Image 1 (cartoon, helix red, strand yellow):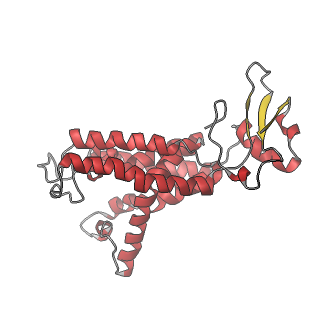
Image 2: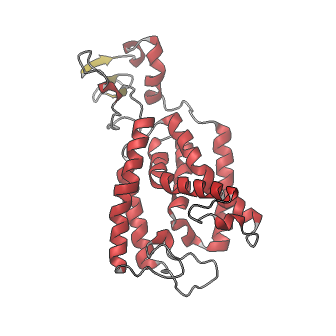
Image 3: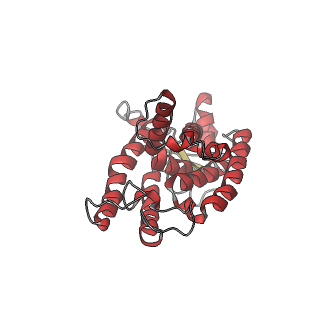
Length: 276
């Protein structure tokens, strides 16, 4: 890598390259539409009190709800780490939700996980709120397309998911438990099995939990991370402040002309001094 010190970072690149470098330097530039931020936040502001009243605060321990909050933070801060974590965690499960929902409409349900969306016994308002499972992954992909993917998301989400699993396993009602009220969340994140009515019996409960803690990162989060990193990571050069230099002096790393073809496509890790 060739390293160049420049007083004005824009002088180091051709005119056509300056916008990408500017994205790293000028964080005041808004990349996500204000309308999307306001509408999404308004939706969450309606959903949270309704869910709290109907299901209780523990409902927000579900992965999809945690991802919803991460998306709110990400859309306002425009820091890729938050939307990246949410996408790693829920992209695959929510795609299954989408497929099953469309299958239900076509009369060909896949898993049955969205059958409640067609239950007239549940209010249309509640089902409308729950439809966020369909469009949230689409919104996350839109955000990542605008601001890029942060490769730290795999580790960050895995640690978050492990914490949620342990809390739900040790502190929340298990599958088949006697509930304090009808809508009380139980068997949250399926830590006791896939059936909320009764715990799985194919193995000890601790073995099932271990299977989730190992299997989800290995077979769900990691492949999702690879795809997102391939599609949304920016191969742009990264500019960061040079220690001991004036505030307007940056350290610019550019691929050497001798680098093998295609090596510039590798998504760089976020470095100290660069916006995450």
